[in-house]
Length: 282
Image (cartoon, rainbow, N blue to C red; front, side, top):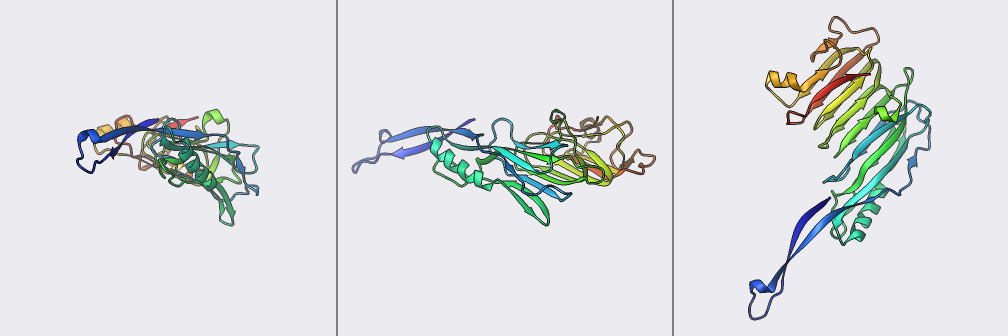
């Protein structure tokens, strides 16, 4: 992606400064990328601990970016890899490389008694490369799938781009007891999960949001929110493949099942008519 900026340089005479003594130089900024960095893998096997994933991403963002959470039924450890990027003037690749080198150092998998913490942050400013424009353009994290007896306790946050958790093309679906997704990026949020009894699911995005659930899904309460006040427009922007599923009630509305999730809370903060909220069934 290229953005234009203007730098004004004046050549002053001791006698007179005229318009002809100034020149305007136009610079374009280019998004430079590095996809060569090796993946990082946790030292310990995951054994039911909480997992927190945060990607500051880059701003502005050109192309696909954000966080992608892949699920593997054979994985025992947690793996993180990224495409790093930084913006710099088109003739200053070295500035971008320096900012990327900083960002590479911020991609970490921290392991403690509190669980696993996977983070990627911005690099430092170097010449024409700024702070916000550098970091993990996209952060890809592979997790064990979890199970009914050992479900995932997962938090995912993104500063820009999309958030995708357990998508169909990845093959496997996570089983969760707690899921908190907070996507601050101006792109879609897409989640596919299974829940255990008492699970709490909160998914928030700034554009369209979709949560896909198994056909036997049940919850003590569902709550859907879009950035709209007109009832007809709200109804047009919220849809569900589950017949009779309505915000503010249990699902089914007659009574939640014995193995129901505790709650499903989904929000789209998008201001536009095409920023929809959809509950899909698989």
